[in-house]
Length: 404
Image (cartoon, rainbow, N blue to C red; front, side):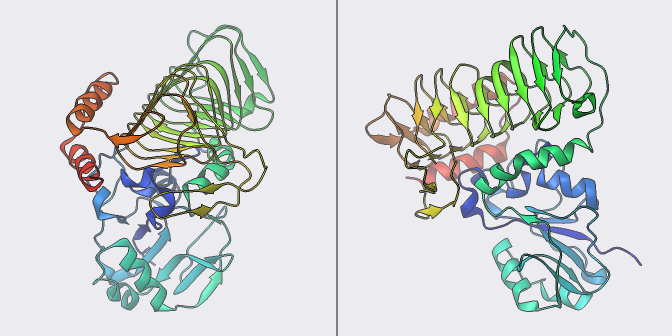
């Protein structure tokens, strides 16, 4: 039997703000790779991705993205999955028409051609989700784990690193290696080509695998505690980094705990960041620190453009959009959400949330000027050998205009 095409469907983007305003949710880093890359590795390349039309023009640096918001030929039916659903090991969609559930929530569908044809009129991810709910195929429990928010991704990340480590292709070569201490089994250290480790480094893999991707660098006196992923060309410059995923082209120093850094981000100085998710092209000034625990030890509530959200989590730090800059000594409050292109400085504790392109001096918020932002962003990106594409510029300009 010929396998039906795979279609990935982004979950509602509001619970992934601000990161989902500049990329499909499927492209968020989780574990050692994006959700899209994980589905590609385990189920084959998707034939389509349904997401917010506003973000389809953003650059896909991994070059994995299939066509967006266009249904493939329905002649064979479809296999459809929520992009942020993590299926159980050995998952198979099956051969019969079905709605697959995780704890009662619909997370995937195996559809016959007549079902597939009924979806042809949908024009957005929201419409596609609504049309799927109306099909009512036979339901069966599949298990797995649905990650329906950016804080759920943060919480699940150490487990995803541990699972992904088994798929990582190690080169078993480390150039420029000085003596270092490995705690735990050697099999828990995965090393890509061109990795460099300086002297007096401690790699503690007793609680989970440590994955160092191609060209990663670990400077002297750094402590790495697994589960941990360090992406291509990224460097740890000292300090303690644990339970985290760091994307490509980053520089990290100080304390980073249980966090995800999407890529091309600088945290090059002392300061604590914990239970957080940072976007791309973020620069944290020296001493920037976030709180990830309320002094009442109560569950963290987040605020944002859609109002207040209960996370149910004891620990939740900061959720920071692309191109955010913080000044020296910046303090980010528990559960802070900082919009794309914002500047936060001036001392004191940040607000609970800031809209896109906020200039916050510790007392008042004004708007970041587009010309100044664009000029700075192009300079920052050029320092990593990257350029801002026309589609990225248009997306960011639209976000800036929408906030006026």
